[in-house]
Length: 388
Ligand SMILES: Nc1nc2c(c(=O)[nH]1)N[C@H]1C(S)=C(S)[C@@H](COP(=O)(O)O)O[C@H]1N2
Ligand SMILES: [Mo]
Image (cartoon, rainbow, N blue to C red; front, side, top):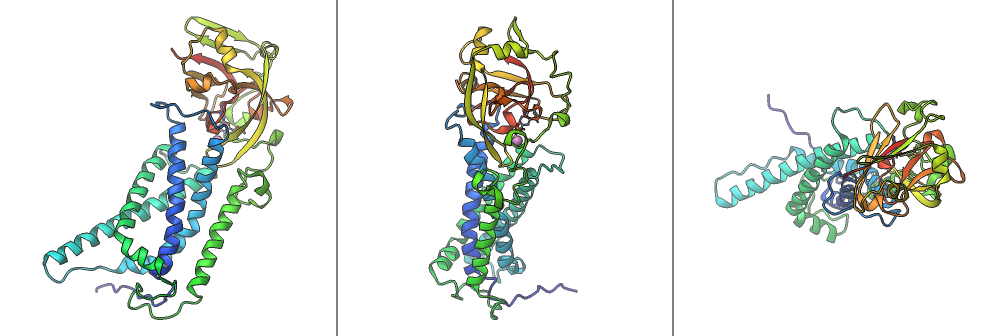
């Protein structure tokens, strides 16, 4: 028995709706792609051109945009897929073998393949991205590398898709939304609501998703941001991703036995917390900007990293590895590129907002540098190594 394709009669499922929603979906994906490249590069250990240290709030903005545009894309993608779903059942096989017919078949195959890749990649990106913002990693692969690779698939397929569909897209966008020229022949019945109402609801849903997310980065929106689960208070007004307890940092580790070693070749400088407090202190306003999109500004006080490096005779232009006391889980160390290590705003912070650092913010000492992904702002620092 041959399966019969379902028929869809509603005029809502139309190119007129798909082109309009698709335009905004394309904007969201482009913003997410560009800001995603920035985030990936910022975390790359082998940067041919150093990631810039300015503006200090740069990563806060780009990563906030990344997560907000990705979240906005969720309702847009759902409506877009709903609008084009009947097309899935269309198979245009040519009747003959003329050149024109074979060319049309070729276009059809390219179109269907690119759509298949695009839909799969788009769903994958939004699902893994959202799961990541919720700190849920139900997969065995490295989130960052796979999310990055699939982003190229998605953007490549998107470009092919737009290229193939350009005549329909421009035709639909330059006509009234009620125009029926690009409708499927069987789409003859009015939908439950008008096309305009469907579009208005879609924009509202996307705007709502943005508002619910953006509060993670924009303090004024915090009250309305239901999705921004960790945007509220943490100790000292800054959220905590991994607590000292979760990292396996014990009271003994940070008690009188605490030492900071600054190592350059054969030279090692060992400091107690009191030694660090006796060094010249600097205060800087810098944000913690998490890859998950939330960010919060703090007033950090501590020792300039370059002062510590100078004490062991570190050469200008050396990268620096920062190692945590942490015993469990990832992000126990990070590499600070030379331009960050030398920057006067890069601190080994001992205090936050006039108080001693909270244990969960990295007491006794944590790294804080301008324009750096939060994941690389290492907490509970016990060792600083100059890389030759
Ligand atoms: N040692 C260590 N440092 C760390 C982490 C970690 O898991 N271990 N998490 C990082 C991440 S993902 C972020 S966003 C920031 C958060 O800093 P906060 O907890 O002080 O807000 O710390 C970073 N520093
Ligand atoms: Mo983070």
